[in-house]
Length: 165
Image (tube, rainbow, N blue to C red; front, side):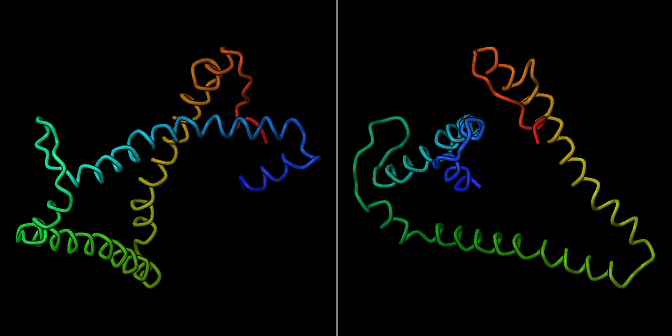
């Protein structure tokens, strides 16, 4: 969709409303991108860099190159922990899928109580979606106290995307 908007706005047929809408989309993406860079990208880069240093967290780090990886290669505890993580990952990726497929198969064959099971199973999904929608509607897109209202107060004309069709 972003490519379509970029193509439309870059052509001579693009209206100023489309350009403003694209600016608004980018403006709403900016906080998420900043948080992702600060919380995910920078720590990931620092982890990769610090893997080549000996550091206890207090003193000055000293560069040791691949020394940490050589020690890991010979460490039995590391290999045991890696094996345990692979087992847990495999279990927690496959077990919910198997249980879901069995439940779906049972719901196709067993008619008695299937409606109650559907209600019990789907209510948490529906409630979380409704709560998320209310948070976005009342806290973020609120014209008085949300991000839209804050930007409008600073003179940045932003329209509520939930109220536009």
